[in-house]
Image (cartoon, rainbow, N blue to C red; front, side):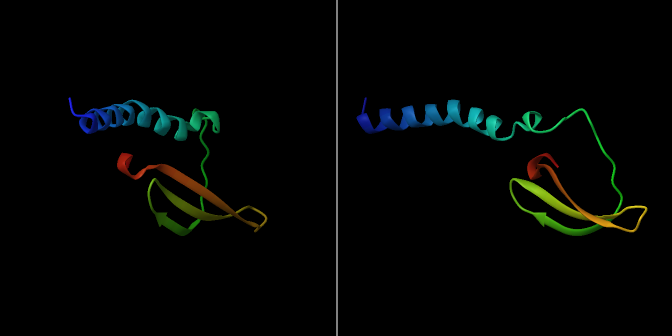
Length: 81
């Protein structure tokens, strides 16, 4: 077998095996957030950023005292929306 072809096959195999593990580690949100808990906010959407790998929202929320707080929200990947 040609050495170049063998090298390409090894590289392709490594990419198929290793890349999903790296992607999973990168997107492991349960280590940073409580995925079972949810909150509800109501406010004005100030900004939406559509980019890979996630869509980002900036929301301004006004509390009962009239004080404004800016919240950032991040969605799942665009492919999952």
